[in-house]
Length: 284
Image (cartoon, rainbow, N blue to C red; front, side, top):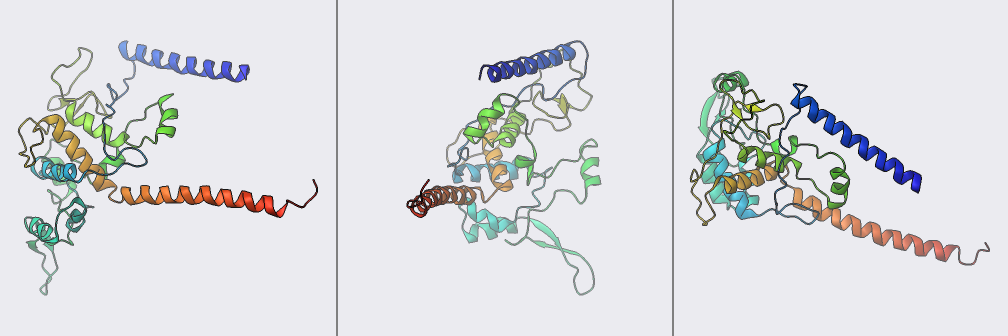
């Protein structure tokens, strides 16, 4: 046991030493490592094995997406009819879908045509193709946000990931998106170079700056339920909505997993009792 503990301590010290060496390299002009700042661990209603979505928050997040994000980012894997899961009625979904124009066809003449959206349609992309998207955004095509909350994330490193196994931490993507949306700042460190037309954000995983300007500002979106109309609240709400978009069946998955665990416990107990019964009269 002492040898194991010594080995574990040596490993921890070596990792810490590597981290300090890396930091020293950064300060001396070595290879930079991003993100510069580690994402904040926010408080989410859907966190943990028993977490659930807050429908009110999801509706607010949809509103933030439509009024702030939809002009540049698509949601091409989300259909309008799935919005009923957010608490909207069928009539409300039909009305919302009709506000969008979608391309359909071909018609009897072989031509494509535009029509109002219906619940079975998916959110249309704001651009015709990726080339148009890039040309409209300084050469950087905005990513589709359908799966962004599951596709993005930052590794938490040792020893944090060990504790994550027991706490069932799975919010790396939402924490990253939330930190990115709230992380824009004009206080640029002297050793950081920001290209022209880019915006400094220490939480960006691909570099010190990105082409997207800060998309949120206080008072940008009006809430009907009295929630704070601040950047922090907007970021949390739209991030929660994007998490739902990426994993709409999360609640059902967790409920199924809980039932499966109960079954496995009961099955293990019955298996043990059966083994005792079968071998009770056998000499050992």
